Length: 286
Ligand SMILES: C[S@@+](CC[C@H](N)C(=O)[O-])C[C@H]1O[C@@H](n2cnc3c(N)ncnc32)[C@H](O)[C@@H]1O
Image (cartoon, rainbow, N blue to C red; front, side):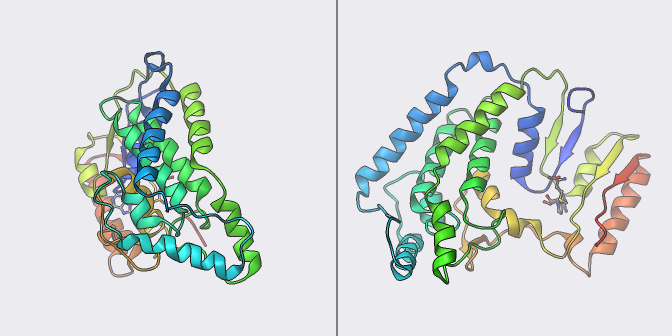
């Protein structure tokens, strides 16, 4: 569809706009023949600088007991109280070490985020951010989202978590970016991608469009599952709360609350009718 017609894509979460911009973008990759190597050079330099300032932050998971493992995790989790003010970009090492990711994985997430920022005035910025999010997903020890990270309560769970702790961010980042370079290119359409509330988005769409709505299906807010992706994209050092280290400002959707869901749907139907548009609604039946 992104290669056949102008579209409007909207989701209240900013990370979702990054994916939409990635897949609907217009690229001339030939302008960036060495982009992967160039990004790695910047990221590696950042990693080296941090390790020069903090040489003790090395956490080795080889041949350890359950108690040693949990102590190692705790040491990393405690980095949240360190200020790291001497390092300009330290969001992930501070907020998430020893949780969904190890310190080392967080270091590489920060490093690649720093490198991506060098491209913030180019469309390739979005594939770079998407590739970091892909690597985050495949390195996280949680179960496909960021609502909670797992605890090691026994040897079996520890061993499983260690599999994820021993993964590296960089190969996953490279794999996804290579795929995006291969599968994206020129796109002559003028897509509009926003991070608005759905009513504001509908206000911006022209009359007589086809609206495909895919609202939340459950009482659990999406922002609880994907807060870490939102933070990667915004990189705004949010206050975080609870074991899951959720952003305190995470979005609460009217579609996920019993008291507001009926009105949320009604307002959507009324607005679409006012706009003389047609609706395709995705629904999930239990
Ligand atoms: C079922 S998911 C759809 C995800 C998307 N269609 C996809 O396939 O990846 C529901 C989405 O609605 C978004 N959402 C929830 N409340 C919203 C609101 N008030 N305005 C805009 N988007 C909202 C959530 O952030 C979530 O990503």
